[in-house]
Image (cartoon, rainbow, N blue to C red; front, side, top):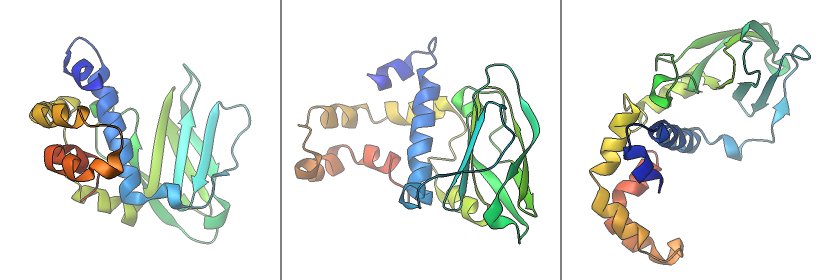
Length: 192
């Protein structure tokens, strides 16, 4: 059980649990899955990166195990006529996920359809227009300062976890019981 593994301080599952919760809540706030299909963005060949746009969001992955991409230029053709700013809304290097970066969002300017990114080795970023990224600040669960704070939040509701775990998997039929006994769980994965 992930909750039990996250409690174990010698393991790193707490970071995975924090990342999973953050990814789900960020998507539920920004709704990128309801956007048009992903579109690859032009970039340098052979860099070991995958960068695509989905609606107004940009997803950047550096799969190289040891080489960082610094000042990496990404072309965003549909923004060629305007200058704007994007902010990181999810960064796998965030300390809350076991990385080495601070939790503050990084800003990236788009000028004439070009954005310059710094992508450390084996990392990923999700970027949103600056005005859309501000909406995430209202979600108190996403503002938790550490994976330990998330584990503590879950641990404080252990009885609710137990009650929800005992329910049959027909969530639709059992939603009143889930909302009553596991309301904290529903709140974790549902934005304000």
